[in-house]
Amino acid sequence: MIPAHIKNRKGARSFADLDLEVIEYLNKGMIETANLMEWLATDQLILLKKVLKDLDREMWYDAFYEAVNVQKKPTANSNTKVIGQTFGQLTNDKSILNSIAKHTSDIPRCWAAFAYVMINNATTTEEVLKAIKPFAADPHFGVREVAIFASKDFLIEDLDSAISILSKWTIDNDENVRRFAGEALRPVGVWVKKIGELQEFPEKGLPVIEPLKSDSSKYVRDTVGNWLNDASKSQPEWVEQLCKRWLEESSTKETAYIVKKAMRTIEKKRS
Image 1 (cartoon, rainbow, N blue to C red):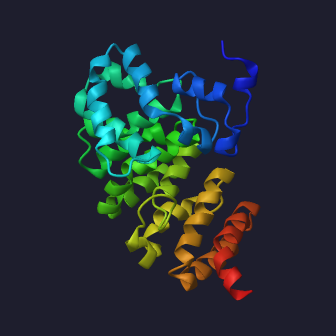
Image 2: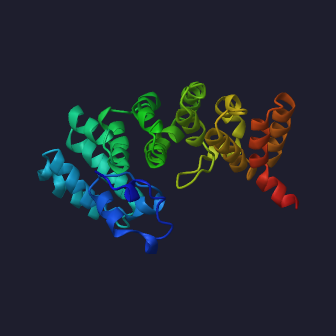
Image 3: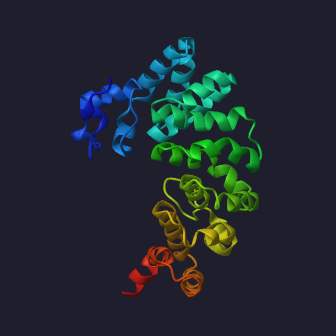
């Protein structure tokens, strides 16, 4: 049983505020991280040992340890990627991979996002997105972000196909899937590679963002507003004209919210 004060915590705001009892639960994989601070504080190698023990694959640990430590500048993000890809290299056993993909802790599910792209022989954009979609829909914010990290390079390299496929995701019933469609193709984004083609020609992204211009989900609306704000830094006139058209075509408060968010950099420069 997980104590109520652990289950109901809000998550530390700084490393100094981290609760050692919480860290112990996180390193054992018994709980999900509550925020980014906890995610960064979790020792992924300690957690990995516990996961491998549960899988009866402790003999694999040295391979993971070497892969993590050969990095020049290991970070929480890069460790997640390396551990996930190492799982993909070591096994294609679906029972093992499904176990980490459905783990109680969000961090093994993050590893699984990278592993699934590899073990499904995801060499085309369609295969990559098929493999990553369950992680894009994950209930945990961290797994959803890692789903973007795991697929971003593929999407940039085959942008036209990515836009075509993700434009269909914009009508999915799951707001997390709709949000992924826009967030994965943000021209700039956060902690990911920029998409130069969309910075220069943001109109190429219309098949993805146009269907979302009055989305019922704030989570999705924030992504669309941020998408356009990204584009406004390189193509402000295009963004301004698009926002004007959207307001003329859609009188909803949802569209107004997106436009306000989209125009914030443009308005700041005017003031």
